[in-house]
Image (cartoon, rainbow, N blue to C red; front, side):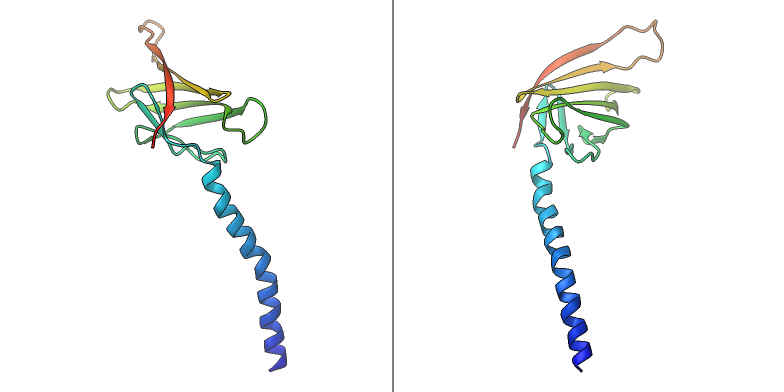
Length: 130
């Protein structure tokens, strides 16, 4: 009886730091996530500072690269590159999202399959949406 009570107590004591760690991570994740952002006709969502995949207009990015401009995890100073399947035509967009000191822009280029095709690109100011 004493052994089983002791084992139960030891398990509880060992589990407490693990449970507290899991709770801390669960509370920190929402703070790492960037808010949904609207840049021109594009809605950016799901991008997080911990490296999960972003979505553009509900489409998951095919390629993603995150560069921190000052310190790692600083979402007010970040540069992100994406390749995203276009929803309105057959092809891909190449996108660069730049948030520098809280001022965000999105540069978009339609990726060409040959150099003879016309280059189409645009730059949009971004704002957080609720």
